[in-house]
Image 1 (cartoon, rainbow, N blue to C red):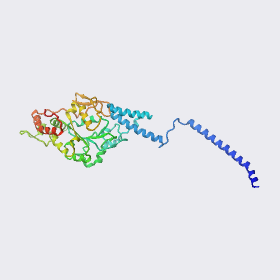
Image 2: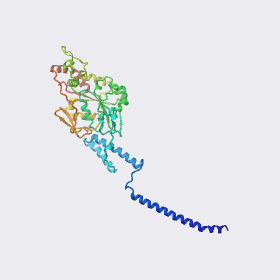
Image 3: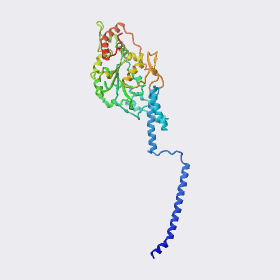
Image 4: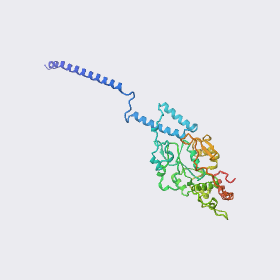
Length: 392
């Protein structure tokens, strides 16, 4: 009885299934037609959804491209070393199918307020800056002196090297701004990538008594560079600079002597005092070994810039990138200039404040100064193991 009742219900159940199958087929057909219509009117390459893997890949590629553009800009005119580094990276990017075309909008520049507050070096204003890459580090090398010795020329020449990043303005941290602290000092530095050296130059460090201990407290491994020059010529150049700012100062002769009759030199005058190199070096050797101090000849920096730059690059442990082909001699100014400065395709010479014409100094005064400096120069030659030829 029960079995027969169930059998009578079977035909209606099969009818329901058939209707359901027909409705499902109609639904699938409608979805297929909608998909075809949507595909027909959609863009050929839909934009990736925000935060999708494709979008993240694009962001990473953009960051890498900016770093490459920065490095190329800083070293585009270098020797085969820089070219090799760039070509290897280009090859890798080409193999990965990554285009290296960058629009101006994608380049990162420092905000004007940071430049105005001096938290970013003024030399970066309006130029490419690796603000999205690297990190700010305390300097590993310092140009500590001497004033009017050729420190600005040395710094400008070194900045051509792709592995050197330097502050343009003189921070004067270890002599005037030490109370601001190391973090303040670090913020003045440009960002560097792995393998690059951070540098700054402040010539007054060499004659500042507290500077050696303060720099040693920052890092005992800091490499120190001192550009030295004939102390007599340096004193006259120092006076010439002051005279250009204060035309009413006394004559060079009157400032040189405590007593003109006896010929006693006034060593309290900074223009004279700076040139007693041996005395200042004694102070530095209490905190740093001679092997961590390099003395650059200001005279040879003019007559053979590539030779002196080679010594500096060796001292810093860098490949000799800066060579003769980077320089030409400017007959008007009387010193070498760069054929192409950092980040530029144009020749670059130091500003109008460099290479001023010296006033005529009484030859007897010059000779008296040479006699005064001679014993100090001899001691300096012995201490450094290098003869600079200032007494010939």
